[in-house]
Length: 353
Image 1 (spheres, rainbow, N blue to C red):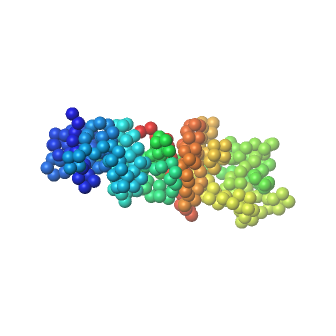
Image 2 (tube, one colour):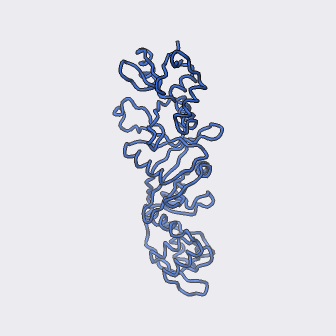
Image 3 (cartoon, helix red, strand yellow):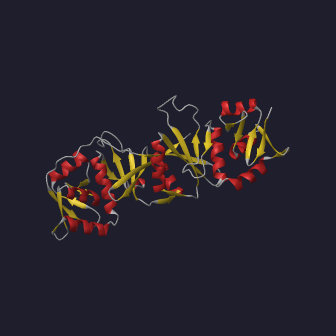
């Protein structure tokens, strides 16, 4: 027998206590109100009609599925994206509730007793259309808010056919086990896109101990960001093709003219090295760096790191491509959001709710 609801002030009221109790206690729909009644929101009402579990009346006249959707589109912003996400998660067995309109997330997981499993994180969901724009600074702010409540943040991206891709989005605290070594000093020759070290002993130490560069004859070729980093540590001095030794400022200025984003990349490279990781180029994987927590002969690179600015924005197709590629090569993708000296590492991981 179908449950009966009454449409009052854009809310659906289930008046029979037995029906109200069954909806709330067993399936966690609605919220109890005075008189042992239950109040459903429009998304819940539409879902229950769609499932054939409720009939809704307005002044004794039954409201059908289409009319309720027409009402909801006028009352709920981005209705289609929210409803498709709500329906999908409900069908997967998740009891979720609609957040208030001014909240940065769209839904929250209903947890009847949050103290039952302290280690279990309550999840919050933000629903997007594939045509929306990702704002990384907004994302970072939401992560901080959700984390304070010991929660997990999910992003649900609804494509134009109504299929949904889910990501778990979180701050990433990177750390590795590779210690910085003391190296003999040497000289590097600046070519256009790399620096070459011809000293055999230095080249061997750099490659074997911290996996800098790649062999170049009996020497080593290193990237521009590696060259600046080693110059900062006084491991190498850099000279130009005319054999002139460049000061650190001259080296930085010249390399900056060759690679305009070198400063932000160097900021992240320096930070990751302090965290005990080995860093190599991630170009073949569509990112700036790939990162190892151990020596490369002990493990594959676990992370791809893409360096972006504080105000980074992106279409969702680009994020989808990056995450899909990272997963296809058994890595995780993180965006290193650089704001001066501060860096936030924000990870996007595919999720199957």
